[in-house]
Length: 86
View 1 (cartoon, rainbow, N blue to C red):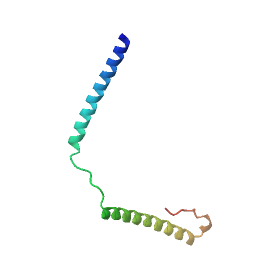
View 2: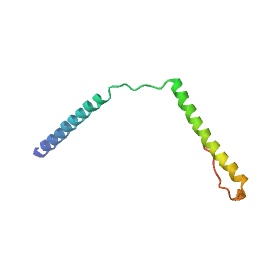
View 3: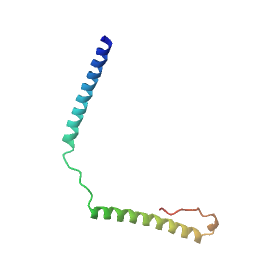
View 4: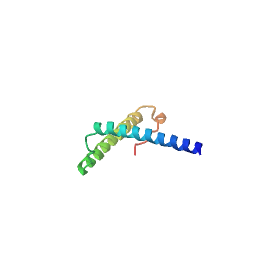
């Protein structure tokens, strides 16, 4: 029975230490995060989507411009294959 008591005592000590560490971490994180997380509104979501679309269009236009510039030169047969961004 001595070994069992020692094992249980060790487990209890580990649990106490873990509980103290998590409590200390919770106190430090709660003081630093005093703001509530704000959910995105529909207008914010539309704004994000339109910005992503504008970036995608700009990338595709740059690729097309490079392809057109490459086809006007003499090395049009050696032009690199480029894919559009989905």
